[in-house]
Image (cartoon, rainbow, N blue to C red; front, side):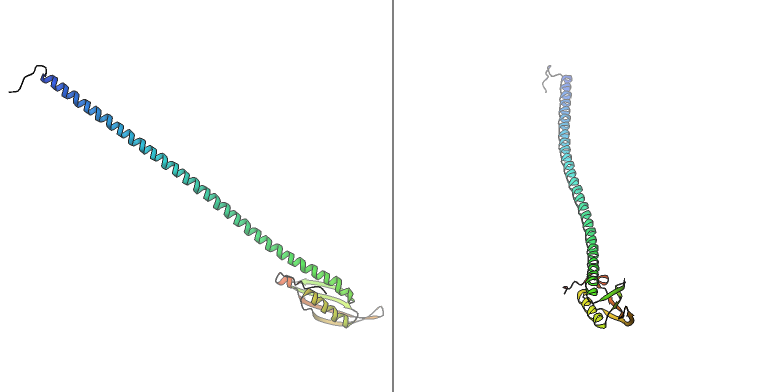
Length: 192
């Protein structure tokens, strides 16, 4: 037979059981809350780290994009500069050819007694017309100009004009291809 204890009355026993269950449930809820809070803290910390890494990667990407854009702009600017230099070289070559042409006409023709009456440069073709005292002057003048310019000078016509102030003169016409207008490079041979 079971002992009957007045200190342990069935109602009191139920109350203690009930209190113990509530305490266990409260302790479980408290422990669950602490675990959930810890999990959220860890997850929040990890999210912050991921956000920081994402921000660092985005800033690196933005820096690389700026660098690529700057490099692209520099390449475009370098291309423009190369084109301008090419154009300037062509202009310089043409200017040198004009200087060479002018110097030859100024120095060679008067020395050989040839007077220039007409000069025409068109589409790479050079046409010269003038007067000379004799055929020897025409031949030696053409040879000197051809040597100086580095291009052959072709005699197109040679006609006797008659007498001017008591001396006979010859009308001449020379033709040549001017290399500076054909390939952009002037032939700069040594001057005699």
